[in-house]
Image 1 (cartoon, one colour):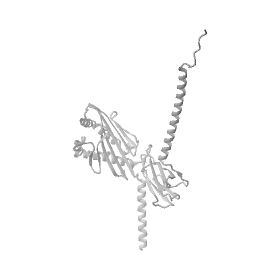
Image 2: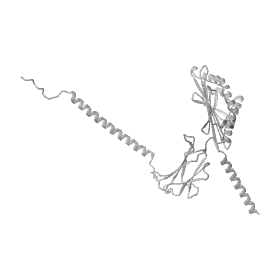
Image 3: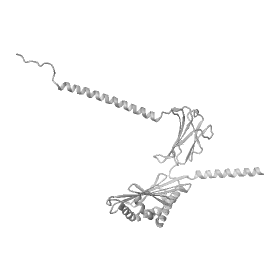
Image 4: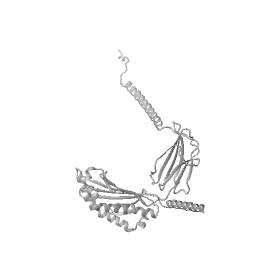
Length: 357
């Protein structure tokens, strides 16, 4: 009886693990929103207001006060958020233009030249993981220099430019604190939740994986596993030896980095001691676009890896040699040319021919 109860408990626990894993697979794990608004002000009027928003490095909407309209770059976003959502966003930006002009004109008084144009920027970012907010920041930038920033988790504005310290009480006032929280929730966190909850804004792409096997001049074996051009960015790379996990050397990672095409890149390197040849190792890759973990074997034949300093020294030596050879040839040609020119310019030293008597 006790055995049956244990079997049922293990069965339930295993099903729960499978359900959690399936849930994590169906939900996009991590997403990031970035919004940047820029205002250029003259002493007389607000010259330009522009904004651009991204979700997971994909442009969502843009705005410019000349046209006074929101341009939606993802067609189905209007269906998810509703037409009124973007109309409200546009009206909000238009209504804030007069306040922006007043605020920037007031900030300009900190400078010595009130007649120059000034640029103010509002930079907001937030991140969610499985629908839960994990990060939320605001940065305030004046003429290219950040003067205030806030982590929404702490709720405290950090002053980076002492001359702007006198505006701390305005930023901390209940009115602007309430507006900041509502704007960040509605136009950052909730916006992203609705978008990514409806549909992936990009097609998922499986990783392209290469595994390399090098021996450095010190005799250590270097194994590297590179995954690139994958989306979304959640990925797992780990090393196994003869099908088993373990720690066999010094492991380093590049971290997940963005590519130019909005996909991602990751390289994990394992440095083994000289007595370990690197045989039997595999790189195991897990990604949402791979139905099962993909296993990539390490090439049997290693290649010698030259140290970067030696390679750089050889390149510099070749360049120096070629430069010296070129200079010598140029000097020789110049010498030959000047010798010929001298011979044609001076009179002959032979005795002159006397006229007949």
